[in-house]
Amino acid sequence: MLRSAIPLIIFILLAILLYKGLSLDPREIPSPLLGKPAPEFSLPQLQKPDAQLNKQMLLGKVTLVNAWASWCVSCRSEHHLLMSLAKDGVQIYGINYKDAKEDALSYLSQLGNPYVINGHDISGRVGIDWGVVATPESFLVDKKGVIRYKQFGPITAEAWTKSIAPLIAQLNKEPG
Amino acid sequence: MRLLLLLCLLQVGLAQAIIESPDIAPDEFATNAQKERFKTLIQDLRCTVCQNQNLADSHASLAKDLRREILEMMQQGKTDAQITQHLVDRYGEFVLYKPRFERATYILWVGPFAALLLAVVGFVVLIRRRAAQPTHLSDADKQALTEELRRPPVSTSSPKK
Image (cartoon, rainbow over all chains, first blue to last red):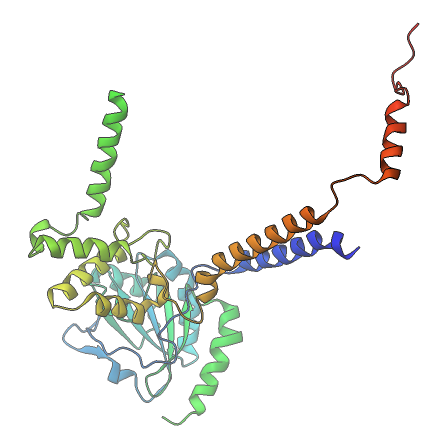
């Protein structure tokens, strides 16, 4: 009886394993930056090229750093959510990734600007330092400048309510 | 035959073209050894956008940027280990086509050998068990067999007219 059940047991175990494997998203590579200080960077601001955006400007508050580009279709789909987050007081800093300046500026004037400041990363160097694979990607950075959460792809309503919003509330309570 | 040869040559040409990576001019390498080193490096690193391609084969824009970054690090005199670590720090171990041997990956490394060992052990046990079974028929079995053989065959088809 037990002997004849062995193939069935093996089948069930395999089925569970494969089902789990299928439900994983291969794009969600665990970021080695989680829990680590955000990389040092300095970028010219998109709107004011003479001024800089650097890591020091992120310190002392909880910030959402969003890598985006005007050529990125899923950034557009995320944009309305970013707009409403900005309205609710979330400090969003942009890394405008490998984008032509005119395109980026007209994107913002058409769709609205949810960013406190945008850094213009034309070469994509800063993107590499942040481990950006494909825009949009968002990082939640705490008051001390440590990356606490990474969102691959657009921020979904679910990710916002379940993960990001509670984490922001928690991080806001932490000493700066 | 000639066609086959031509195809082979074409294949070699194609592979060469890809490895040469068009975005980096050959004269950017100081020595041939450096060029070879670059080739080996980019073949063992994964393009994180396309995932199933290495940096050498990928035409993704990020792969291009990473190739350039690797070249610059080489020119700064960094070692292969330093360059690899630089990428691992940003993108995780996922960039390595040959994962390191550590706690998270030991099943990956040991698993196939463990499975092979298990199969060999199972096979040996099975063969031994079969070998231990008696190969001679008992008298009772012999009797039953002869009786069975003597019996006229039972026809399953309809009887002939």
